[in-house]
Length: 170
Image (cartoon, rainbow, N blue to C red):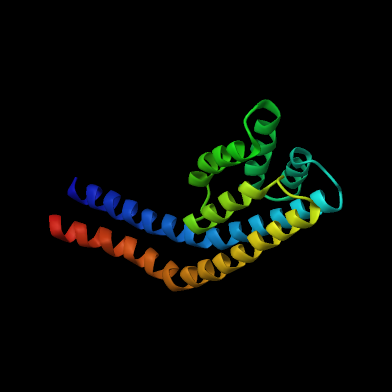
């Protein structure tokens, strides 16, 4: 019975390490998707002259999940709600962020971007989108560095932590 418990504990800690490593791997991928989404949003607003609701729907159809969920839910909630655009943006960020692998830096960038969304003319909006994209590029570099630095270590640490706990209790 001890061995079964030890095996379950070892599997659980190893799985935890692999899950954390997966999040480290997903973060740069999702930042790239977010940058792509902002570029599509820029094109829809500036060149398609689409209102924010329509632009976000088009963005949601063109990008992969989980980023598509954010923009789809945002446009749906804008249609149904009488709250301000920023309030809806903030609510969507709060509910979406735990489901993603994105970090606090990206969250803050998106919050700041949400404060400017729909508040300026086309050129002003374009500047704010480009600013958000440049900030996301900085976060992308950091995320890639973290992935390279910590991914293997976290996997090994999960396994070794389980092994240590088993040895301490045996």
